[in-house]
Image (cartoon, rainbow, N blue to C red; front, side, top):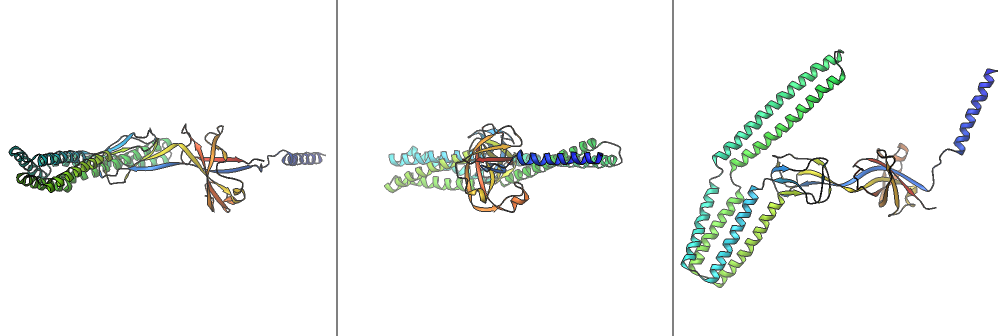
Length: 394
């Protein structure tokens, strides 16, 4: 009797389950197109157009910046010097033109001769190279950086020895895993400190080489050319003005003005500013590092407007069009819906990435789409998984 009763109960349970599945289970709505993907943003690696030593980085990871904010700057001492030289050349060129147009007087001839003497002295100063004191200071900085690197390396060795010793004690049951993890963390911190110390040694070594090399050949070339020009101007003023000489002097004034603009632009180019509002995703260089043109300093992401990169099947491709409204949700904020707009539909089919769809769907050809989303609160982050739903009008 008990067996019969159990059989009846089992039949009722199975029958009830089948009834619920047939009448009440949620069916896929044919008027909904569902997609999944990841949040993407516009991000750019920012670097300088010039080369030089990174003097300061003012932005760190995670910081929000506005368009025009100063993010980093190079050591601009050489570029500032070039501006001063260019302005001096402009002033001198204008003075020569004024003298030619007014005619040469004895005091004017003496003035041009004095300028030639000053430029001869400036060239000699550049050719003499860096002062011994500057080289001595750079060498001392390198020694200090090397000493710091040795100390950091010793800390790494000590931290590694502590970790290995306490890990053996843990394996024998003497201490907890939390204690071992503490020593592992200390070892990682010591290793990062050693890497930073090595970077400081490299920067100090590069600085010493730059000081030993003395002034850049470009500055020496400019000084030599300025001296030759001053000597030619002296001969010109002594001989008195001619029409062709006045025309040449006017051209030289215009050339000097352009040189000032170029030199001032180099000073501005030594400043790295944010091209748009955004968030710093990563930093790639530290102060003291030698930067080549285009070498990334920071990575900046535009977070106010993001998009969801997703895929739609071929059977649904004909049901969607650009400009359609989309509803997007994320696992991080399950109760919040983000309104979006379908802004891109690929014209070429491809296989869906493994991270997005099921195995069966990955075997099918899909079409990539982009859904533009407003992200004023910056809650949506790059790489965040999200789901999208498009409602098709009946």
